[in-house]
Image (cartoon, rainbow, N blue to C red; front, top):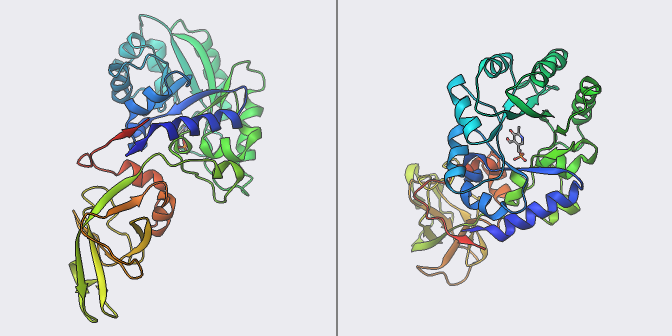
Length: 352
Ligand SMILES: Cc1ncc(COP(=O)(O)O)c(C=O)c1O
């Protein structure tokens, strides 16, 4: 179940935290597993642009009727994509010399808005600060280019005590001081925790889906509302004796007589296979503990202290009452991975 009203509410919070900026709502990877078309549809009247990872993702949004600007956040990968970018009015990142050369050599139907990316210290994508000015001047003079946005990306903004974000911001500002163009820096973490590092265009992703990337709670974080609920049901209740082991490999051995609930969800649905014993699972809204290895279609939970539990009772794997962050922490991953890992066999319903 995906709550689109929660997405809208989280979007409004992002805008409130960064007043006067414009927003790229990041919906790559199928809207972080929430459905890119549905999320973009819910935000279409408010968002200034949408962010995706590839031309294919952008075209899927256009096919779904999204007319707002769409930004390819890693740009194009081959010159033959450029015609389609112009035709579909897609914005592109330019992060390297190869892309710059392909763009300058292209003959396009119309000019593109380009987001010129600087590597301010994360060392993933982006032009070195020293070559940024030259690249900018080439683009500014190019008929293939309409507007230019200067952008960079933070590597550690989720760590609220890590001054690296300030250093990245300072480096970006220093090397763009003489260029008068709008800027774009902030992912969700920077929107939430680094108000001096927002730039003119913010790029929130995970916070739209109601999850904080920050390493500590804040007042703003408390206002986020999770949009995704991964739910299922109890399909069997078993009473096991002390010494009996549950599931593959017999990983969990009952220390006492144990009531075990079997839930219809497994790694075939995107529930993490490496979830350890004790990972919380909500049964009838109350916390049970994972007991035994996750299988493809089923998990098993210790129902101790939960009172009467019957076949058909509701189960929440993560959602509004059990944060995906907590499950991710228990499993040594992040909510982003859990969300994007939910598989296509899980029926998706939307609430507005
Ligand atoms: C360039 C860029 N901007 C913004 C985002 C959104 O990040 P978040 O989901 O942490 O807000 C991403 C996500 O990976 C990104 O790659």
